[in-house]
Length: 146
Image 1 (tube, rainbow, N blue to C red):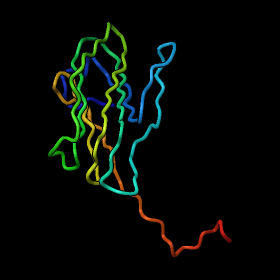
Image 2: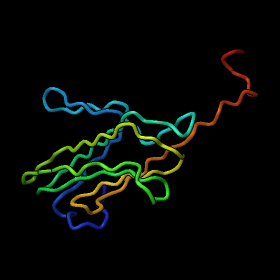
Image 3: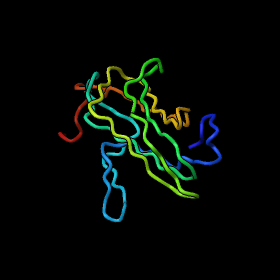
């Protein structure tokens, strides 16, 4: 993912970002991701999401404060903002930073913006599309019943 207008672009790189239901640390310092998604499709809006995990995997050098925020469509208001956390990368090192959000309430469909900040500066953005599932069309014949 490319950096968005930041002076950190030469010393740190965001290798990947994963949105999922949960992240667990396994034996051997391995991460397990449960319920990975890029979009959310639900039968009704508004709805609650009990848990959202965002894993950012970094490569580079230096010490930073990392923060993640989720903005409503239109970018005027934050749905959730994490507490800044320390991110330390030894010379030519890498590190994963996992942020958990609990009990999020999505009140509208649209494109939510997941922003990652380093030292209070915007580093990157990811779109999280939230859509209502269309109700099944009851007039269409079900091919499984024929």
